[in-house]
Amino acid sequence: MARPNENRGRKRRDDDDRDEFVDKLVFINRVAATIKGGRRFSFAALVVVGDQKGRVGYGHGKAREVPEAIRKATEVAKKTMVRIPLREGRTLHHDSNGRHGAGKVLMRAAPPGVGIIAGGPMRAVFECLGVQDVVAKSKGSSNPYNMVHATMDALKKQTSPRGVAAKRGKKVSDLVARRQDGASAPDAVNSDA
Image 1 (cartoon, rainbow, N blue to C red):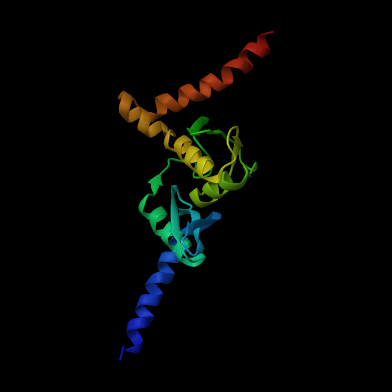
Image 2 (image 1 turned 120 degrees about the horizontal axis):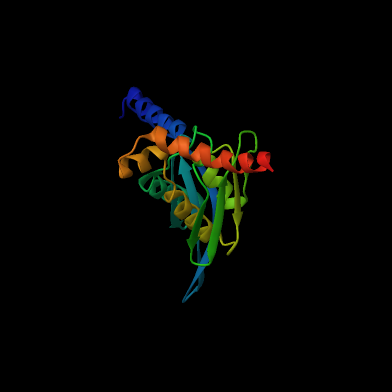
């Protein structure tokens, strides 16, 4: 017979794990395999998992029952998590395009207060990632699998000023100052006219 305290400890660890990550069910598909006696149904689930602090992953799971498929997909998503650099912890550093198969996405950084302007699968990825302000558009396939893959492709292309400065052997302040000067250059031209 198991001691009562053992089960409590396990349960508490599971609850802590659930609190750490946010998971979103993006898509469930019922698939059928034709066998000798008829059809055998199973379910495929697409899940996105993130910590809302810059880490996100996605997973796909198949099983005979929906909860089991979701559990498998969640485990895969937790194993494939990647860290994405965010500006001020709320938006992207720069615009980027992503592609997977026929799925194409465009993502743009947005000022504070804009919110997440994105549809379906892309919105789930941004919410799990912790992005608060972004404008995104899906230009290709509306297949949820392709959209999630393309969104992750675009996110993996994100670079932070710190990472670029390290590669180029410069200071972060030089790059950020240049970006702000470049943004104010058109205003200077218009004021002279």
